[in-house]
Image (cartoon, rainbow, N blue to C red; front, side, top):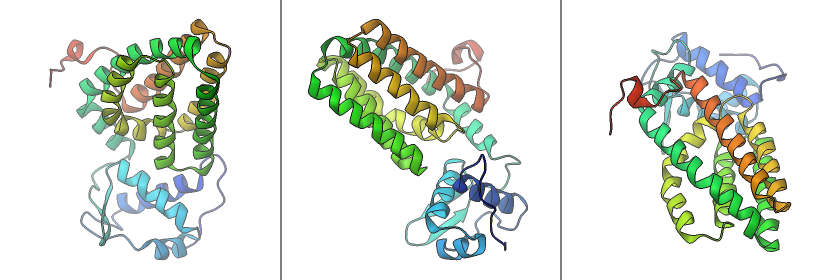
Length: 249
């Protein structure tokens, strides 16, 4: 590969780099088992910074196209995908029952927790919630999947904690590990991170107004749209997995 990448318009620079590398894999320039050039070499070839290369590699890793072997480098692991979104769809289909169950549990807990937070939050808790919402927006501006996942998790955990209900908080903590990959995949979807930041702002506004009804509605809208985007991108059915032939795991 040679030549620089033109300045991004609608796509972020890491996305354009990721598309470039994906095309190279699909064309056979890099085959399964082959090691990709180092970050500095790719940065030189594509005319971008190493940060953009690092973020692009992360996107390819999430799509199941490459794996990063510590101390060794980045290797191609799948060249059979004609479109990288198929890797996302394959992951979602494989975990469909878990995804639906997690969403249902999360929706059940967070809606009530958000309403309680609006009624019970302290001034200090509200200040922290606003700070965490800003951090999530900053992560979107920096175009970092890792930061997006971390800041989104921190915002929602604190929001649930503001409910002042230890049982709900403990139950939510049980869901958090299972939500990590869900967050990584969903927040990597086009436009999802920006919308997530805006939704957090709406939730904060309702909690600040001490309005449980508005807070519950803002939380419901945020989670429902997120789930719809995820399902549409993955090509999953909107029915419960057991209605479409799925089985318990």
